[in-house]
Amino acid sequence: MLALIQTILLALDIYWWILIASAIFSWLYAFNVVNPRNPVVGTIGTFLYKATEPVLRPIRNILPDMGGIDISPIIVLLGLYFLRQFIIITVAPLVL
Image 1 (cartoon, one colour):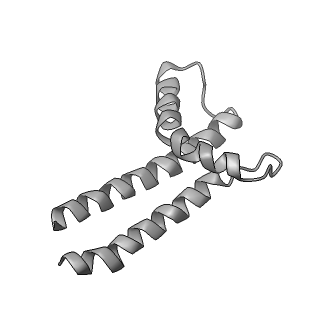
Image 2 (tube, rainbow, N blue to C red):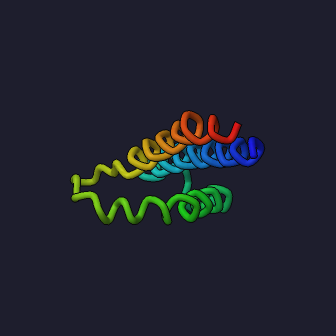
Image 3 (tube, rainbow, N blue to C red):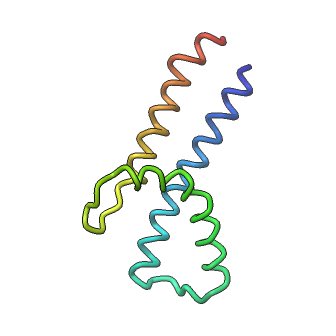
């Protein structure tokens, strides 16, 4: 059971970094730092979009319009942090 908890925590950590990479990539794309016509950049952008959009879209639909500021990644990161801490503090001691 400990292996399952560690695997879930690893998956949460990986998704945490994917969300951060997606936010940074969106800034780089918005400010034309990266070339969107480059196939490698396009592939990375497509992967990050497809990996994060299913989680971010429902939160964006709930949040009010903030004039171009998207705080949905911050909310998801806080949710991931809460879930990780909940697993470590509450679930793991019950299993061990």
